[in-house]
Image 1 (cartoon, rainbow over the protein chains, first blue to last red):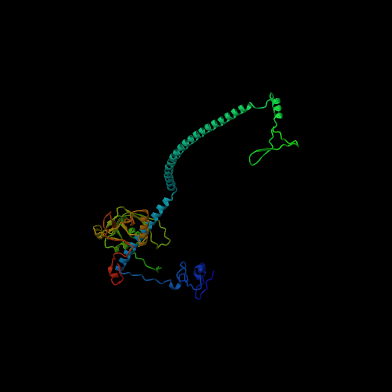
Image 2 (cartoon, rainbow over the protein chains, first blue to last red; image 1 turned 135 degrees about the horizontal axis):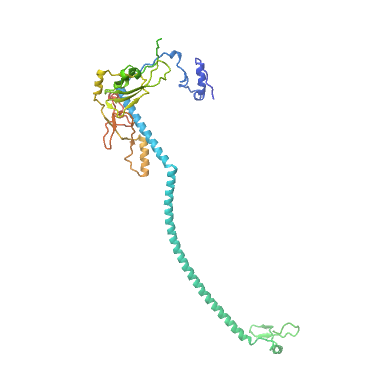
Length: 219
Length: 196
């Protein structure tokens, strides 16, 4: 804060009282304060001006009539405008009142829930249709699968039957403990040579293997 | 010691009510009293004293005026107040004058009242505010034509005007503009356009 420069011819009392306004007065070196450079309002009138009585101002009648009219109009207008502002502010405040806000929220919630219910119904209908469709599809699918399984099963059974039939037919030639001796004798008597070669004319060339005990006898 | 008062003078003309009523028989009940400041009106204004009582002396100085409490029937600018008025706080003002008994008839029989003015109910908003309000109304889809400022008048006192009824044309106008001047001679030599 820049201190006020004490001017010459300024009363000490006045200056002391001015100190409270230093921040107002001396914001810069180029500012000249008009209002506070002299007597503060709470000091008594200066001695030189104690007995000075200001003259009463005389305003001409027509001027005073006109001034009165203007002042009356101005005051009525400003009062009305102020009332208007106050009332609009009150209305705004009322809008933000707790009860009103709660009521508005409740109304809003009701509207929202109505819309939500509508949506829910719509979605429920769609879901119902879809579920019915899905159920039908599933039933079809299951039926198809069952059919397919039946077919598959019957095919497998047929296959098995055939195999069994084959096996039964072959079973006659099986070597059993009863005919094992006969089979051994038969095998020893009829030696089959499987170690053969084929030439270009597809004639089998049998080469007797005399040496070596390689398995030239087919079992 | 003679006291000499120095300072601004007031506009009052007359005596405090205490001094007037104290010198009268029965404390002036039934007499007429007028206020000096009300004499500027061409119509008659007076007060008829109905009841008088003194108030305790709380003055710091014997020269300070004292107060009385009086019930009066008040006539202001030729219009009688519908209710009786109690005066106490203002009775110290040296502004009361007693009406001599031979002149009382002149006051009581006076019928002149000021011309009744009809004041407007509504007026236009200031230009910028009006534009803002019109914009707001248009945004909300409201009617733009009925954007008017409701004028507020003081409900107190005896009035020489009344507020216009619905659809009634007012005799005076209150606008944000200069309006119709009361003394056009003041605006005679102004060359600026739309001065009045």
